[in-house]
Amino acid sequence: MATETDRASAAATDPELACPTSAVVDIVFSRWTTPILWTLHTHGRQRFVELERRIGAITAKVLTQRLRQLERDGMVVRTYHPEVPPRVEYEITDLGRSLAPLFAHLSQWAAANLDRVEQARHAYDGQTP
Figure 1: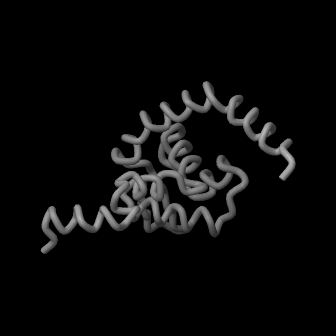
Figure 2 (figure 1 turned 135 degrees about the vertical axis):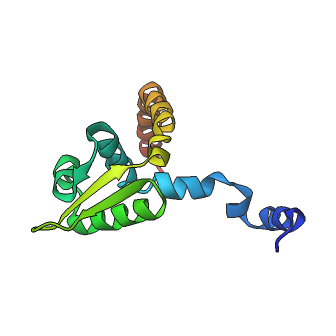
C-alpha cells in the first residue's frame, strides 16, 4: 500500500502526479466533452440522434466514444429502454452538473480575454522567424 511519502516522492518526479488538475483537464476538456455536457445540461435528457443534431459537427462514431467515456467518468448516465425499437437516452449526472461553475468561470474569462489572445496571435504571426 502506497504511503503519503511514496506519493509525495512520485509526485516530485512525475509531472502528471505533481499537478492534480491534469486528470481533470483530460476528463473535462476533451474536444467534445464541453458541447455534450452543455447540451445535456441545457436541454435535459436526450436521445443519441437529438444530441447529434444539436451538437452539429460531431460524427456518430466520436459522439459514441465520448458518451461512453463520459458515462465511465460518471458525468453522464445512459438509460436503455427495451422497447421496439429500442430507445437509449443520455442525461447529465449531478457530478457532470457540478462542473457548471467551472464552465461559467471559463466563459467569463473567454469574454474578458479572447480579444487579447487574438491580438497576441496576430502579433506573433506577424513576426518573421
